[in-house]
Amino acid sequence: MSVYIAPQQDTIFVLDQLVELDKLAAQYALDDVSLELAEVIVQEAGKLATDVLSPLNTAGDKHGTALVDKQVQQSPGYKEAYQQYVDNGWATLTGPTEFGGQGLPNVLGTAINELWHSANMAFALCPMLSQGAVEALTAHGSPELQELYLHKLISGEWTGTMNLTEPNAGSDLAAIACKAKPEGDHYRIRGQKIYITWGDHQMTSNIVHLVLARLPDAPAGVKGISLFVVPKYLLSDEGEPTELNDARCISLEHKLGIHASPTCTMSFGDNDGAIGYLIGEPNKGLSYMFTMMNHARQSVGLQGLSISERAYQQARQFAKDRTQGTTKDGQKIAIIDYPDVRRMLMAMKSGCEAMRALSLCAAADIDKHHHGDLDAKARVEFYTPIVKGWMTELSQELTSLNIQIHGGMGFVEETGAAQHFRDARILTIYEGTTGIQALDLVGRKTLNDDANALKQLLNEVSNTVSQLSTSTDTTLNQITPRLNRALQKATAVKDWLLAQGKADRQMAANVSVDYLMMMGYLCGGWLMAKSALRAVELSGQNNLNNEANTYSEDFLTAKQGTSHFYAEYYLPRVHQHADTVLSGLSSTFSLDTDQL
Image (cartoon, rainbow, N blue to C red; front, side, top):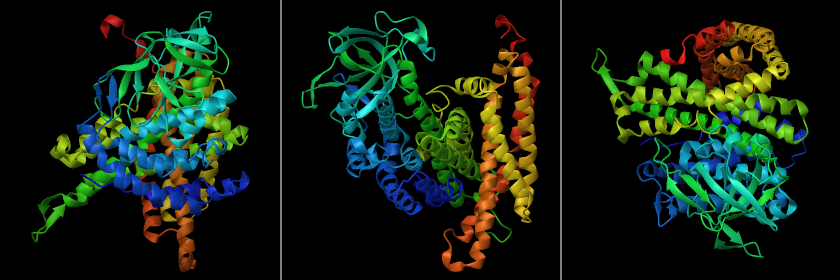
């Protein structure tokens, strides 16, 4: 099995050259935040990821969770690993300081979360959802609920979950039937939720469920949904877990992948009714839950990068070790020297670098929004479906390439390549399918916005093209016209959507996924082009001052190479998806139901 190593240098490069972390920290008076701190944090997190979490990944796949005596038993070793994660303070990284968190920016948390998900995605799903619960309670919870639950959630002493989906209400949350009956200072919750990630386990002394349910007098549809805190164990007057609440896991799903992450069917109120506490105002639960959902959507997009990076590292090592054929003088040839294998490795490496750039830049915009930047708010909303949709779709391709590089051995479970492919397959589905993300992007984030956020983004791409155009560097001269042609295609799509999409929403829906994918490849190409530009500039500085090199010349040369490859290999996909959008895909409904 391959050993996972944190991609520290590329992470720091993006934080430094694209995010401009030191500048961001100065702008928002984040006195303790710096690139130097980020380097230390990434290095230390990498140790836990490599030494503790990664070795459990294969074992967790083979020996998943089990429901024993009405309780979920986590995979062997996971409880001890989680305790190390908590003891080392990783759970507190981005939590608000007033509740025991370290208050570090979201972009640093995102950089570290990449490492957890690469090392062991099934494990990392647990703290990921806890972070979402913290976001929701911080934004919408009463001071009393915050005091009771945030300290323990942020410390990692308790974990959190998100309970939306029901057997008859998948993505259609308007159909939610779970009931909440008022009773004094609390509510009795009755109903069933499905697909609840880490809905039960024995790693912590309590689990805090955030549950969508309807009050007796609630209006129909999404306007009648409220949000409740439903703890696994009720709390004493001192805030400590006491008796078991009427909320339990009644079954576990048998899944294609992420076997060590328990996916629970949760039953609330089989007996007296589960006791819950209202978050915020009645009937505003869905808007509150979107705080948690949007956090989760960017996190799932990050998982697309993480699992792709893990697959890339495995493929690279295999390609170095595997020999096939000999030279004329009888020397064995490593398959990494074959053009097709090299093509696939470059596709994986450049794809991962583009996704890392996008995920960290999007995370930094969340920090800017939290500090009152209204332009950043619009960018966050525009980026979220792209991060979630494009990055998870690309992960399907990249984890599949890992299997292809392994050849027949990739189809054999013992090599571990198949696990990454299986684990990645859920990413385009949960937290809103690619189709849902695409409808959000084309509808609320583009047409309803008169494409203002899109126009701003295209302007920034245009500025980068202008900067590239002044360079005499050979590599940049190869990238520039490709990025410019992709920009022109995207601009044509913008004009078409405003002219045709507004008038025909069905047609806009037909092409929404292609629009999302087009924007993903364009954003990736734009950020890779900026990376190449910075790498060329830094390389020149290295030549002038060899004592002040932050990045090795080898790294800077490699960054130019992957950026060039991305422009040649991935940017043409902008044209493909754009042409599909411009067709309107009027043939989508050319067959009636019986003809399909």
